[in-house]
Image (cartoon, rainbow, N blue to C red; front, side, top):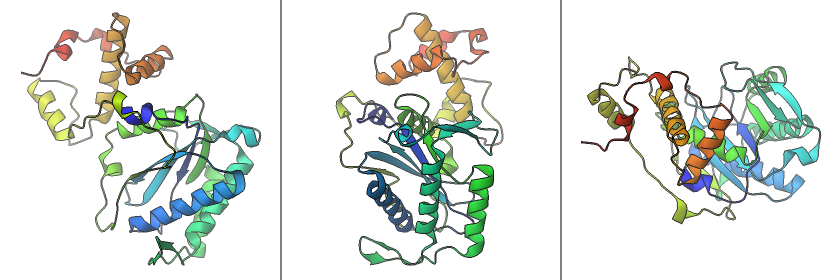
Amino acid sequence: MEVLTNSEPELNSMIVATYPETYPDDGRIVKAHHKALIQAIKHKYGGYSYFTAIEYQKRGAPHFHQALSFSLSDFGEVTTLKRKSVSRRKPTFQTVKPVQDWLFETWLDIISKPDISYNGEPLDWGGLDDEDIEAMRTAYYHYNAGFSWEVMREKDGAKRYLVKEFSGLKRYQKQVPAGYQNSGRHFLYSKDMIFDLDEAIIFIVPEGVIRERLEAAKWKFIPDGGKPLYKRLFNAAAGLAIVLIEAGYEPVQSSLESLKKYADQGWLLFPTFANWPKTEQWLSPNP
């Protein structure tokens, strides 16, 4: 996450591309579609840098988020659209509608074609039928769902969005579905992306280990029924970081610097955290 936060250049727009009821079960097909979409954008608008994260929906379908060094607002009037899902943190998003419409139809054309290859190897992809195509168009044009090319509301917002996604711990999005083949790399990026490894702090802790530690500490906010921890941990970590920053602790990495900025805007405020007793227990080393 830190590597992406410190990367260059800035990534200021975000493409989210999904599939209809028919979707590929081979990662090579998804990557071939991804490559074709990049080529179409470059052919029309010129080169750009990107970082892409491939994830999976609950139904098992792949989709991807592509952050771009592309100032979408340079190509038309920015308009605000309402999302289909009102449960999202932001119920609206901003885009340049004619450009987004063009890219949606381009994406639909790419995934509809049955003839496709990856690194010169023909792939078994039957394309989409008329019902799939109609469903995609209905979802997109009537509900603003299934595809988007968003203007980030803040500088370098696409990176921060991806960092939030990576830290969300939504396990079903990261786990390869049963029967899915050749998943390969889930993070793709252009060769001109620059990552500052010297400034990076990288660590991965399995959710099971976190849950065991919290249970041993008798943390009363552990969700029941095997529900994921990510929402509780995100709020708790945000609240703790805000308390530390307000107490005078100086951020030592850009992730905390960003967190301070988020806190100033009130995005991560955890209202009940100030009432938690013994905040210092979170600062103690593990026994």
